[in-house]
Image 1: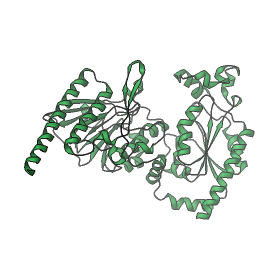
Image 2 (image 1 turned 90 degrees about the vertical axis):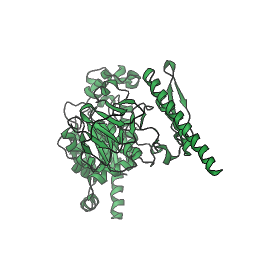
Image 3 (image 1 turned 135 degrees about the horizontal axis):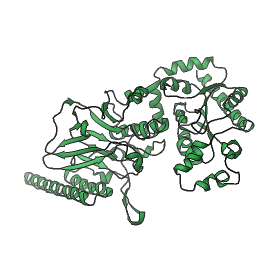
Image 4 (image 1 turned 180 degrees about the vertical axis):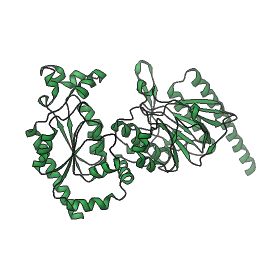
Length: 487
């Protein structure tokens, strides 16, 4: 009786698996003809639910809380609710399908290969040997999905499943993580916002934080690898595979393509299985750059009498230049700071920069990519962002929100029209000066960016700014006193 019962259950399982395979092939056909991004994600969840019933395990559908959005007519969308999350199950893969692509996000796509795969770099193709299922997926692994002009510069990768594939020339026991260092690389803000923060999220979401992965990167230029060598070595102990100039075929136990982003300079704890935040990433940076920093910091700070302020300077001609930098530096010194004038360049080493800023008490600068160095500040430090006309919302999402997340004592100095060089070109009564928000509206076009980000320079009102410096000084003295008691 027991044996016959097992036979019945096994037959049921076989029938359900057969049904799932039929559905899978039907889905592949559907995608070739209609190919809505939603169909892949939602139909696969239904298939997984059938398979889970046969295998007596939780399905992704029952474990996930992330809503799926189906594009509707007229730009509207239908949100499909899914049951509450179980964190340990959210990022589990499904072994019944060798390839799974998630295209449900606005900013990024990811594809996962759960079985051994062969990379042929010359054609940017991953091959999966499967005698039954024939399928093709394509992905541009950069988290700026909706920016067509940007994504057109990102190398497209192909995943092919079929009975044949190339011969393996280099065998790896580890998994591969594939992404592009193209796009906005060269801009310090974007190198972190679109690169290293998403890389950190992805490794801790899809790989459980392990470092036994091989980074396969397109547009991994020599200067970029040299600049970020300490950081890249913290992500992976293996040599980087340059997708642009490697010609040998590589075999991996599995592969993930694409990076996960949670938005501007942020890590959302509810969107990753370890509940990580931006503070965890900042700790990762400290571990990567300054393993012996704590001892040096204590010895240096014991010798400091005045709090240290780093004044970030922008290069001439870049826009948003602080025209009275020398006067601002002198004013800060008069208030009681030791001031370091910092103008980062292509030759600036990040390890020394991290050490300098990490040992400082205050960071001051005009909104721009260089303020990404605020990630190097210790929690509790003071960060003053000088906000030019017309970029208030940008200053908030790029640096204001992250500063609060990181536990900084954040201060925002919004300049008046009199402190902007735009008053020399436009009348005070014009909307571009009088009400930048209304002038911009919802259109952050290249022309508007040119005005507020490129044409505009700043000359601070020293009397007004002195009040901010005094507040920062009091806060920094309290930091020094607290650290002195701890040491």
